[in-house]
Image 1 (cartoon, one colour):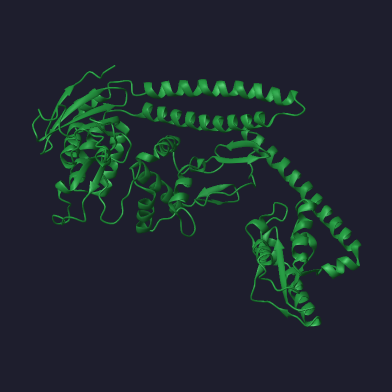
Image 2 (cartoon, helix red, strand yellow):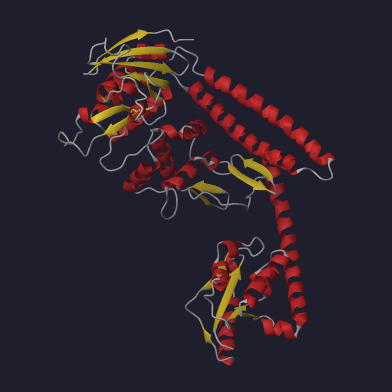
Length: 539
Protein backbone atom coordinates (compact mmCIF):
# COMPACT_ATOMS: atom_id res chain seq x y z
CA UNK A 1 0.00 0.00 0.00
CA UNK A 2 1.34 3.48 -0.95
CA UNK A 3 -0.11 6.93 -0.56
CA UNK A 4 -1.06 9.37 2.16
CA UNK A 5 -3.36 9.17 5.19
CA UNK A 6 -6.04 11.85 5.53
CA UNK A 7 -8.23 12.45 8.57
CA UNK A 8 -11.77 13.81 8.09
CA UNK A 9 -13.87 15.15 10.96
CA UNK A 10 -17.44 16.41 10.78
CA UNK A 11 -19.70 17.83 13.49
CA UNK A 12 -23.29 18.80 12.69
CA UNK A 13 -23.17 21.05 15.77
CA UNK A 14 -19.91 23.02 16.28
CA UNK A 15 -20.29 22.50 20.03
CA UNK A 16 -19.48 18.83 19.50
CA UNK A 17 -15.94 19.83 18.55
CA UNK A 18 -15.30 20.77 22.18
CA UNK A 19 -15.21 17.07 23.16
CA UNK A 20 -12.39 14.54 22.85
CA UNK A 21 -13.49 12.80 19.62
CA UNK A 22 -11.32 15.01 17.41
CA UNK A 23 -8.22 14.35 19.54
CA UNK A 24 -9.03 10.63 19.65
CA UNK A 25 -9.46 10.43 15.88
CA UNK A 26 -6.28 12.43 15.19
CA UNK A 27 -4.30 10.07 17.43
CA UNK A 28 -5.91 7.06 15.72
CA UNK A 29 -5.04 8.39 12.24
CA UNK A 30 -1.40 9.01 13.28
CA UNK A 31 -1.13 5.55 14.79
CA UNK A 32 -2.74 3.89 11.76
CA UNK A 33 -0.33 5.66 9.41
CA UNK A 34 2.68 4.61 11.50
CA UNK A 35 1.56 1.00 11.72
CA UNK A 36 1.12 0.76 7.95
CA UNK A 37 4.21 2.71 6.97
CA UNK A 38 2.30 5.65 5.50
CA UNK A 39 2.64 9.38 5.96
CA UNK A 40 -0.14 11.35 7.67
CA UNK A 41 -0.93 14.44 5.62
CA UNK A 42 -1.31 17.13 8.30
CA UNK A 43 -1.15 20.00 5.83
CA UNK A 44 -4.67 19.35 4.48
CA UNK A 45 -7.45 20.25 6.93
CA UNK A 46 -10.51 18.07 6.36
CA UNK A 47 -12.92 19.40 8.95
CA UNK A 48 -16.59 20.35 8.65
CA UNK A 49 -18.18 21.97 11.69
CA UNK A 50 -21.88 22.76 11.74
CA UNK A 51 -22.50 21.17 8.31
CA UNK A 52 -25.22 18.57 7.95
CA UNK A 53 -24.49 15.21 6.29
CA UNK A 54 -28.26 14.61 6.03
CA UNK A 55 -28.76 17.68 3.82
CA UNK A 56 -25.35 17.11 2.12
CA UNK A 57 -24.09 20.59 3.05
CA UNK A 58 -20.70 19.09 3.88
CA UNK A 59 -20.46 18.00 0.24
CA UNK A 60 -22.01 21.09 -1.36
CA UNK A 61 -20.00 23.66 0.57
CA UNK A 62 -17.64 21.84 2.91
CA UNK A 63 -14.29 20.10 3.11
CA UNK A 64 -15.64 16.69 2.09
CA UNK A 65 -16.91 18.18 -1.17
CA UNK A 66 -13.42 19.54 -1.86
CA UNK A 67 -11.90 16.12 -1.08
CA UNK A 68 -14.36 14.30 -3.38
CA UNK A 69 -13.57 16.77 -6.17
CA UNK A 70 -9.85 16.10 -5.62
CA UNK A 71 -10.53 12.35 -5.80
CA UNK A 72 -12.50 12.81 -9.01
CA UNK A 73 -9.70 14.91 -10.46
CA UNK A 74 -7.04 12.33 -9.60
CA UNK A 75 -5.27 14.65 -7.16
CA UNK A 76 -5.43 12.18 -4.26
CA UNK A 77 -2.78 9.46 -4.79
CA UNK A 78 -4.06 5.93 -5.32
CA UNK A 79 -3.42 3.83 -2.25
CA UNK A 80 -4.24 6.69 0.12
CA UNK A 81 -6.40 6.26 3.23
CA UNK A 82 -9.26 8.39 4.55
CA UNK A 83 -9.83 8.00 8.30
CA UNK A 84 -13.28 8.88 9.69
CA UNK A 85 -14.91 8.36 13.08
CA UNK A 86 -17.71 6.28 11.50
CA UNK A 87 -19.45 5.89 8.16
CA UNK A 88 -22.24 8.25 9.21
CA UNK A 89 -19.61 11.04 9.31
CA UNK A 90 -19.32 10.65 5.53
CA UNK A 91 -23.03 10.74 4.81
CA UNK A 92 -26.51 10.54 6.29
CA UNK A 93 -28.20 10.99 2.94
CA UNK A 94 -30.47 8.41 1.33
CA UNK A 95 -28.63 5.05 1.39
CA UNK A 96 -28.24 4.82 -2.39
CA UNK A 97 -26.64 8.28 -2.46
CA UNK A 98 -24.46 7.56 0.59
CA UNK A 99 -23.17 4.33 -0.87
CA UNK A 100 -22.42 6.07 -4.18
CA UNK A 101 -20.14 8.48 -2.30
CA UNK A 102 -18.36 5.60 -0.58
CA UNK A 103 -18.02 3.83 -3.94
CA UNK A 104 -16.58 6.99 -5.52
CA UNK A 105 -13.79 7.02 -2.95
CA UNK A 106 -13.13 3.26 -2.96
CA UNK A 107 -13.20 2.98 -6.77
CA UNK A 108 -10.48 5.63 -6.92
CA UNK A 109 -8.17 3.24 -5.08
CA UNK A 110 -8.60 4.90 -1.69
CA UNK A 111 -9.30 3.00 1.53
CA UNK A 112 -11.84 4.30 4.03
CA UNK A 113 -11.03 3.39 7.66
CA UNK A 114 -13.56 3.88 10.49
CA UNK A 115 -11.87 4.70 13.81
CA UNK A 116 -14.86 3.63 15.92
CA UNK A 117 -14.60 -0.08 14.93
CA UNK A 118 -11.29 -0.32 13.04
CA UNK A 119 -12.95 -1.55 9.82
CA UNK A 120 -11.34 -0.85 6.46
CA UNK A 121 -13.27 -0.48 3.19
CA UNK A 122 -11.22 -0.92 0.02
CA UNK A 123 -11.84 -2.65 -3.32
CA UNK A 124 -9.71 -5.63 -2.29
CA UNK A 125 -11.32 -5.84 1.16
CA UNK A 126 -14.88 -5.64 -0.19
CA UNK A 127 -14.09 -8.22 -2.88
CA UNK A 128 -12.74 -10.61 -0.26
CA UNK A 129 -15.57 -9.92 2.22
CA UNK A 130 -18.73 -8.90 0.30
CA UNK A 131 -20.71 -8.88 3.56
CA UNK A 132 -18.77 -5.73 4.55
CA UNK A 133 -20.55 -4.00 1.69
CA UNK A 134 -23.88 -5.19 3.10
CA UNK A 135 -22.80 -4.03 6.56
CA UNK A 136 -21.88 -0.56 5.24
CA UNK A 137 -25.30 -0.31 3.60
CA UNK A 138 -27.05 -1.26 6.86
CA UNK A 139 -25.05 1.40 8.71
CA UNK A 140 -26.06 3.98 6.10
CA UNK A 141 -29.73 2.94 6.28
CA UNK A 142 -29.73 3.29 10.06
CA UNK A 143 -27.93 6.67 9.94
CA UNK A 144 -30.36 8.03 7.36
CA UNK A 145 -33.41 6.82 9.29
CA UNK A 146 -32.11 8.42 12.49
CA UNK A 147 -31.53 11.76 10.76
CA UNK A 148 -34.80 11.52 8.85
CA UNK A 149 -36.74 10.89 12.05
CA UNK A 150 -34.95 13.74 13.80
CA UNK A 151 -35.55 16.03 10.83
CA UNK A 152 -39.28 15.26 10.83
CA UNK A 153 -39.50 15.89 14.58
CA UNK A 154 -37.64 19.18 14.27
CA UNK A 155 -39.79 20.21 11.29
CA UNK A 156 -42.99 19.37 13.17
CA UNK A 157 -41.79 21.38 16.17
CA UNK A 158 -40.91 24.39 14.02
CA UNK A 159 -44.27 24.21 12.23
CA UNK A 160 -46.02 24.20 15.60
CA UNK A 161 -43.96 27.18 16.78
CA UNK A 162 -44.66 29.19 13.61
CA UNK A 163 -48.39 28.50 13.70
CA UNK A 164 -48.41 29.35 17.40
CA UNK A 165 -46.63 32.64 16.73
CA UNK A 166 -49.14 33.60 14.05
CA UNK A 167 -52.03 32.65 16.35
CA UNK A 168 -50.48 34.64 19.20
CA UNK A 169 -50.22 31.60 21.50
CA UNK A 170 -46.41 31.22 21.48
CA UNK A 171 -43.56 33.74 21.71
CA UNK A 172 -40.32 31.74 21.85
CA UNK A 173 -37.39 31.53 19.46
CA UNK A 174 -37.69 29.70 16.14
CA UNK A 175 -34.42 27.94 15.32
CA UNK A 176 -34.69 27.99 11.55
CA UNK A 177 -32.79 29.99 8.97
CA UNK A 178 -30.26 32.75 9.51
CA UNK A 179 -30.94 35.74 11.72
CA UNK A 180 -29.98 39.24 10.50
CA UNK A 181 -26.66 40.59 11.67
CA UNK A 182 -28.09 43.92 12.87
CA UNK A 183 -29.78 42.12 15.81
CA UNK A 184 -28.28 40.05 18.60
CA UNK A 185 -29.80 37.38 20.80
CA UNK A 186 -30.63 38.05 24.43
CA UNK A 187 -32.13 35.87 27.16
CA UNK A 188 -35.53 37.48 26.53
CA UNK A 189 -35.38 37.57 22.74
CA UNK A 190 -33.53 39.96 20.44
CA UNK A 191 -32.18 43.50 20.48
CA UNK A 192 -30.79 45.83 17.83
CA UNK A 193 -27.03 46.23 17.52
CA UNK A 194 -26.95 50.08 17.61
CA UNK A 195 -24.12 50.71 15.11
CA UNK A 196 -25.47 48.14 12.64
CA UNK A 197 -29.04 49.40 12.95
CA UNK A 198 -27.65 52.86 12.18
CA UNK A 199 -25.95 51.38 9.11
CA UNK A 200 -29.16 49.86 7.69
CA UNK A 201 -31.06 53.12 8.31
CA UNK A 202 -28.35 55.04 6.46
CA UNK A 203 -28.47 52.46 3.64
CA UNK A 204 -32.22 53.00 3.32
CA UNK A 205 -31.88 56.79 3.37
CA UNK A 206 -29.20 56.79 0.67
CA UNK A 207 -31.09 54.31 -1.49
CA UNK A 208 -34.27 56.40 -1.33
CA UNK A 209 -32.15 59.41 -2.33
CA UNK A 210 -31.31 57.60 -5.57
CA UNK A 211 -27.80 56.43 -4.69
CA UNK A 212 -26.37 53.35 -6.41
CA UNK A 213 -25.34 50.28 -4.43
CA UNK A 214 -21.64 50.88 -5.00
CA UNK A 215 -21.88 54.49 -3.86
CA UNK A 216 -23.86 53.52 -0.75
CA UNK A 217 -21.14 51.05 0.21
CA UNK A 218 -18.49 53.71 -0.28
CA UNK A 219 -20.36 56.19 1.88
CA UNK A 220 -20.90 53.60 4.63
CA UNK A 221 -17.19 52.80 4.57
CA UNK A 222 -16.33 56.49 4.86
CA UNK A 223 -18.60 56.75 7.90
CA UNK A 224 -17.19 53.56 9.44
CA UNK A 225 -20.58 51.81 9.26
CA UNK A 226 -21.49 48.28 8.18
CA UNK A 227 -24.67 46.22 8.67
CA UNK A 228 -22.75 42.91 8.60
CA UNK A 229 -19.49 41.25 9.55
CA UNK A 230 -16.77 41.41 6.91
CA UNK A 231 -16.94 42.85 3.39
CA UNK A 232 -20.23 43.36 1.56
CA UNK A 233 -21.34 43.86 -2.05
CA UNK A 234 -24.05 45.72 -3.94
CA UNK A 235 -25.93 42.45 -4.42
CA UNK A 236 -25.88 41.78 -0.68
CA UNK A 237 -26.94 45.36 0.00
CA UNK A 238 -30.00 45.06 -2.25
CA UNK A 239 -30.87 41.77 -0.54
CA UNK A 240 -30.76 43.46 2.87
CA UNK A 241 -32.96 46.32 1.66
CA UNK A 242 -35.63 43.79 0.60
CA UNK A 243 -35.52 41.90 3.90
CA UNK A 244 -38.72 42.09 6.00
CA UNK A 245 -36.46 41.64 9.03
CA UNK A 246 -35.89 45.41 8.73
CA UNK A 247 -39.39 45.85 10.17
CA UNK A 248 -39.03 42.92 12.58
CA UNK A 249 -40.61 40.17 10.45
CA UNK A 250 -38.98 36.75 10.21
CA UNK A 251 -39.85 35.11 6.89
CA UNK A 252 -39.24 31.39 6.46
CA UNK A 253 -40.47 28.33 4.60
CA UNK A 254 -41.01 25.10 6.54
CA UNK A 255 -42.04 21.89 4.74
CA UNK A 256 -43.26 23.95 1.79
CA UNK A 257 -45.37 26.22 4.01
CA UNK A 258 -44.46 29.92 4.08
CA UNK A 259 -44.60 31.96 7.29
CA UNK A 260 -44.16 35.60 8.19
CA UNK A 261 -43.64 36.04 11.94
CA UNK A 262 -44.41 39.71 12.51
CA UNK A 263 -42.74 41.35 15.49
CA UNK A 264 -40.18 38.55 15.86
CA UNK A 265 -37.21 40.97 15.79
CA UNK A 266 -36.99 44.59 16.96
CA UNK A 267 -37.65 46.84 13.95
CA UNK A 268 -34.87 48.97 12.48
CA UNK A 269 -37.31 50.80 10.15
CA UNK A 270 -40.95 51.85 10.41
CA UNK A 271 -43.50 50.03 8.22
CA UNK A 272 -43.91 53.24 6.17
CA UNK A 273 -40.16 53.49 5.55
CA UNK A 274 -39.95 49.83 4.53
CA UNK A 275 -42.93 50.11 2.21
CA UNK A 276 -41.35 53.14 0.53
CA UNK A 277 -38.10 51.19 0.24
CA UNK A 278 -39.85 48.31 -1.54
CA UNK A 279 -41.60 50.71 -3.90
CA UNK A 280 -38.20 52.22 -4.71
CA UNK A 281 -36.76 48.75 -5.29
CA UNK A 282 -39.49 48.02 -7.83
CA UNK A 283 -38.11 50.95 -9.85
CA UNK A 284 -34.42 50.05 -9.56
CA UNK A 285 -33.90 50.92 -13.22
CA UNK A 286 -34.57 54.51 -12.17
CA UNK A 287 -32.13 54.44 -9.27
CA UNK A 288 -28.42 55.02 -8.98
CA UNK A 289 -26.65 54.89 -12.30
CA UNK A 290 -22.92 55.19 -12.84
CA UNK A 291 -21.26 57.46 -10.33
CA UNK A 292 -17.62 56.58 -10.69
CA UNK A 293 -14.69 58.87 -10.11
CA UNK A 294 -15.13 62.07 -12.13
CA UNK A 295 -18.57 61.08 -13.42
CA UNK A 296 -21.56 63.45 -13.46
CA UNK A 297 -24.91 61.62 -13.29
CA UNK A 298 -27.57 62.97 -15.62
CA UNK A 299 -30.87 64.13 -14.17
CA UNK A 300 -33.39 63.38 -16.93
CA UNK A 301 -31.76 60.48 -18.83
CA UNK A 302 -30.93 56.92 -17.82
CA UNK A 303 -34.29 56.52 -16.05
CA UNK A 304 -36.30 55.17 -18.97
CA UNK A 305 -38.72 58.09 -19.45
CA UNK A 306 -36.99 60.58 -21.79
CA UNK A 307 -37.57 60.26 -25.56
CA UNK A 308 -37.03 62.16 -28.79
CA UNK A 309 -40.17 63.89 -30.06
CA UNK A 310 -39.26 63.38 -33.71
CA UNK A 311 -38.53 59.64 -33.92
CA UNK A 312 -39.55 58.22 -30.52
CA UNK A 313 -36.09 56.87 -29.71
CA UNK A 314 -34.69 57.12 -26.21
CA UNK A 315 -32.63 60.16 -25.30
CA UNK A 316 -29.26 59.61 -23.63
CA UNK A 317 -26.82 61.80 -21.76
CA UNK A 318 -23.14 62.15 -22.61
CA UNK A 319 -20.23 63.72 -20.71
CA UNK A 320 -17.37 64.69 -23.01
CA UNK A 321 -14.58 64.38 -20.46
CA UNK A 322 -12.02 63.18 -22.98
CA UNK A 323 -12.32 66.19 -25.30
CA UNK A 324 -12.23 69.20 -23.01
CA UNK A 325 -10.83 70.55 -19.80
CA UNK A 326 -12.94 71.31 -16.77
CA UNK A 327 -13.75 74.89 -15.78
CA UNK A 328 -12.17 74.79 -12.35
CA UNK A 329 -13.75 71.73 -10.77
CA UNK A 330 -16.86 71.84 -12.98
CA UNK A 331 -17.61 70.39 -16.38
CA UNK A 332 -18.52 73.08 -18.91
CA UNK A 333 -22.30 73.01 -19.72
CA UNK A 334 -21.56 72.70 -23.42
CA UNK A 335 -19.84 69.37 -22.87
CA UNK A 336 -22.77 67.73 -21.10
CA UNK A 337 -24.86 66.65 -24.08
CA UNK A 338 -28.36 65.36 -24.74
CA UNK A 339 -28.50 62.91 -27.67
CA UNK A 340 -31.18 61.01 -29.56
CA UNK A 341 -30.45 57.30 -30.05
CA UNK A 342 -31.92 57.64 -33.57
CA UNK A 343 -28.88 59.66 -34.57
CA UNK A 344 -26.78 56.51 -34.32
CA UNK A 345 -28.67 54.70 -37.10
CA UNK A 346 -26.91 54.70 -40.50
CA UNK A 347 -30.33 54.93 -42.13
CA UNK A 348 -30.89 58.30 -40.45
CA UNK A 349 -33.90 57.17 -38.44
CA UNK A 350 -34.27 60.58 -36.77
CA UNK A 351 -35.35 63.23 -39.28
CA UNK A 352 -34.08 66.12 -37.16
CA UNK A 353 -31.01 64.85 -35.29
CA UNK A 354 -29.40 67.45 -33.10
CA UNK A 355 -27.05 67.22 -30.13
CA UNK A 356 -27.92 69.78 -27.44
CA UNK A 357 -26.42 70.84 -24.13
CA UNK A 358 -28.56 69.30 -21.40
CA UNK A 359 -27.69 72.07 -18.92
CA UNK A 360 -30.49 74.51 -19.95
CA UNK A 361 -33.07 71.69 -19.91
CA UNK A 362 -32.03 70.70 -16.38
CA UNK A 363 -32.06 74.33 -15.22
CA UNK A 364 -35.52 74.99 -16.69
CA UNK A 365 -36.98 71.80 -15.20
CA UNK A 366 -35.54 72.48 -11.73
CA UNK A 367 -36.80 76.07 -11.89
CA UNK A 368 -40.26 75.05 -13.08
CA UNK A 369 -40.74 72.37 -10.41
CA UNK A 370 -39.52 74.71 -7.65
CA UNK A 371 -42.77 76.70 -8.04
CA UNK A 372 -45.57 75.30 -5.86
CA UNK A 373 -48.25 76.48 -8.32
CA UNK A 374 -46.65 74.50 -11.13
CA UNK A 375 -46.36 71.40 -8.94
CA UNK A 376 -50.02 71.66 -7.86
CA UNK A 377 -51.00 71.70 -11.53
CA UNK A 378 -48.82 68.65 -12.24
CA UNK A 379 -50.26 66.78 -9.26
CA UNK A 380 -53.84 67.70 -10.21
CA UNK A 381 -54.33 64.53 -12.22
CA UNK A 382 -55.22 61.17 -10.71
CA UNK A 383 -51.67 59.87 -10.38
CA UNK A 384 -52.93 56.52 -9.11
CA UNK A 385 -55.25 55.79 -12.04
CA UNK A 386 -52.60 54.11 -14.28
CA UNK A 387 -51.57 51.91 -11.35
CA UNK A 388 -55.18 50.99 -10.56
CA UNK A 389 -55.72 50.05 -14.19
CA UNK A 390 -52.56 47.94 -14.16
CA UNK A 391 -53.66 46.26 -10.92
CA UNK A 392 -57.04 45.42 -12.41
CA UNK A 393 -55.36 43.80 -15.43
CA UNK A 394 -52.97 41.84 -13.21
CA UNK A 395 -55.74 40.57 -10.96
CA UNK A 396 -57.80 39.56 -13.97
CA UNK A 397 -54.83 37.67 -15.38
CA UNK A 398 -54.20 36.02 -11.99
CA UNK A 399 -57.80 34.77 -11.94
CA UNK A 400 -57.43 33.45 -15.52
CA UNK A 401 -54.23 31.60 -14.57
CA UNK A 402 -55.91 30.05 -11.51
CA UNK A 403 -58.79 28.85 -13.67
CA UNK A 404 -56.38 27.38 -16.25
CA UNK A 405 -54.39 25.66 -13.50
CA UNK A 406 -57.53 24.09 -12.10
CA UNK A 407 -58.44 22.71 -15.52
CA UNK A 408 -54.92 21.38 -16.14
CA UNK A 409 -54.78 19.85 -12.64
CA UNK A 410 -58.12 18.14 -13.19
CA UNK A 411 -56.86 16.73 -16.50
CA UNK A 412 -53.66 15.48 -14.86
CA UNK A 413 -55.55 13.81 -12.00
CA UNK A 414 -58.01 12.08 -14.33
CA UNK A 415 -55.29 10.72 -16.61
CA UNK A 416 -53.20 7.67 -15.77
CA UNK A 417 -50.67 8.66 -18.43
CA UNK A 418 -50.64 12.48 -18.51
CA UNK A 419 -49.18 13.96 -21.72
CA UNK A 420 -45.88 15.78 -21.28
CA UNK A 421 -47.50 18.91 -22.75
CA UNK A 422 -49.92 19.05 -19.79
CA UNK A 423 -47.07 18.88 -17.31
CA UNK A 424 -45.13 21.55 -19.20
CA UNK A 425 -48.21 23.79 -19.39
CA UNK A 426 -48.77 23.48 -15.64
CA UNK A 427 -45.16 24.44 -14.99
CA UNK A 428 -45.39 27.45 -17.33
CA UNK A 429 -48.61 28.60 -15.68
CA UNK A 430 -47.05 28.35 -12.23
CA UNK A 431 -44.08 30.43 -13.39
CA UNK A 432 -46.36 33.07 -14.92
CA UNK A 433 -48.46 33.12 -11.76
CA UNK A 434 -45.36 33.90 -9.71
CA UNK A 435 -44.46 36.79 -12.03
CA UNK A 436 -48.00 38.17 -11.93
CA UNK A 437 -48.07 37.99 -8.14
CA UNK A 438 -44.72 39.82 -7.94
CA UNK A 439 -45.96 42.52 -10.34
CA UNK A 440 -49.19 42.86 -8.35
CA UNK A 441 -47.28 43.34 -5.09
CA UNK A 442 -45.06 45.96 -6.77
CA UNK A 443 -48.07 47.89 -8.09
CA UNK A 444 -49.73 47.79 -4.66
CA UNK A 445 -46.57 49.19 -3.07
CA UNK A 446 -46.49 51.99 -5.65
CA UNK A 447 -50.11 52.82 -4.82
CA UNK A 448 -49.28 52.98 -1.12
CA UNK A 449 -46.38 55.28 -1.87
CA UNK A 450 -48.59 57.60 -3.94
CA UNK A 451 -51.22 57.63 -1.20
CA UNK A 452 -48.62 58.94 1.24
CA UNK A 453 -47.34 61.52 -1.25
CA UNK A 454 -48.32 65.17 -0.82
CA UNK A 455 -47.39 68.09 -3.02
CA UNK A 456 -46.89 70.38 -0.01
CA UNK A 457 -43.19 70.71 0.70
CA UNK A 458 -42.07 69.04 -2.54
CA UNK A 459 -41.35 72.43 -4.10
CA UNK A 460 -38.84 73.09 -1.30
CA UNK A 461 -37.05 69.84 -2.17
CA UNK A 462 -36.70 70.96 -5.79
CA UNK A 463 -35.45 74.41 -4.71
CA UNK A 464 -32.96 72.96 -2.23
CA UNK A 465 -31.51 70.70 -4.94
CA UNK A 466 -31.41 73.24 -7.76
CA UNK A 467 -28.10 74.82 -6.78
CA UNK A 468 -26.46 71.42 -6.25
CA UNK A 469 -27.67 70.23 -9.65
CA UNK A 470 -26.16 73.30 -11.33
CA UNK A 471 -22.92 72.82 -9.37
CA UNK A 472 -22.73 69.19 -10.55
CA UNK A 473 -22.93 67.85 -6.99
CA UNK A 474 -23.37 64.08 -7.36
CA UNK A 475 -25.66 63.60 -4.33
CA UNK A 476 -27.92 66.50 -5.32
CA UNK A 477 -28.16 65.27 -8.91
CA UNK A 478 -29.04 61.73 -7.84
CA UNK A 479 -31.79 63.05 -5.57
CA UNK A 480 -33.10 65.31 -8.35
CA UNK A 481 -33.01 62.37 -10.74
CA UNK A 482 -35.24 60.47 -8.34
CA UNK A 483 -37.68 63.39 -8.03
CA UNK A 484 -37.91 63.46 -11.83
CA UNK A 485 -38.64 59.72 -11.93
CA UNK A 486 -41.26 60.05 -9.18
CA UNK A 487 -42.99 63.02 -10.82
CA UNK A 488 -43.09 62.25 -14.54
CA UNK A 489 -44.17 59.31 -16.67
CA UNK A 490 -42.58 60.67 -19.82
CA UNK A 491 -40.38 63.55 -20.97
CA UNK A 492 -40.43 64.21 -24.72
CA UNK A 493 -37.67 66.43 -26.11
CA UNK A 494 -37.88 68.37 -29.39
CA UNK A 495 -34.24 69.47 -29.71
CA UNK A 496 -35.02 71.92 -32.58
CA UNK A 497 -38.45 72.99 -31.35
CA UNK A 498 -41.90 71.67 -32.22
CA UNK A 499 -41.47 73.02 -35.77
CA UNK A 500 -37.87 72.35 -36.89
CA UNK A 501 -36.63 74.94 -39.36
CA UNK A 502 -39.36 77.43 -38.44
CA UNK A 503 -38.74 77.77 -34.71
CA UNK A 504 -35.78 79.88 -33.51
CA UNK A 505 -32.44 78.05 -33.60
CA UNK A 506 -31.81 78.53 -29.89
CA UNK A 507 -35.10 76.93 -28.76
CA UNK A 508 -35.71 73.47 -27.23
CA UNK A 509 -39.30 72.33 -26.66
CA UNK A 510 -39.97 69.79 -23.92
CA UNK A 511 -43.29 68.07 -23.30
CA UNK A 512 -43.71 66.90 -19.68
CA UNK A 513 -46.27 64.19 -18.92
CA UNK A 514 -46.80 63.94 -15.17
CA UNK A 515 -47.99 60.83 -13.39
CA UNK A 516 -51.76 61.03 -13.63
CA UNK A 517 -51.84 62.39 -17.19
CA UNK A 518 -51.34 66.16 -16.74
CA UNK A 519 -49.17 67.54 -19.54
CA UNK A 520 -47.12 70.72 -19.73
CA UNK A 521 -45.00 72.18 -22.52
CA UNK A 522 -41.79 74.04 -21.73
CA UNK A 523 -40.12 76.19 -24.37
CA UNK A 524 -36.53 76.50 -23.23
CA UNK A 525 -33.84 78.89 -24.43
CA UNK A 526 -30.12 78.21 -24.28
CA UNK A 527 -29.89 79.98 -20.90
CA UNK A 528 -32.44 77.70 -19.26
CA UNK A 529 -35.37 80.14 -19.36
CA UNK A 530 -38.81 78.70 -20.05
CA UNK A 531 -42.37 79.52 -21.06
CA UNK A 532 -45.01 77.09 -19.86
CA UNK A 533 -48.40 76.40 -21.36
CA UNK A 534 -51.01 73.66 -20.98
CA UNK A 535 -51.40 71.38 -23.99
CA UNK A 536 -54.07 68.97 -25.09
CA UNK A 537 -52.66 65.47 -25.55
CA UNK A 538 -53.72 63.67 -28.72
CA UNK A 539 -56.28 60.95 -28.04
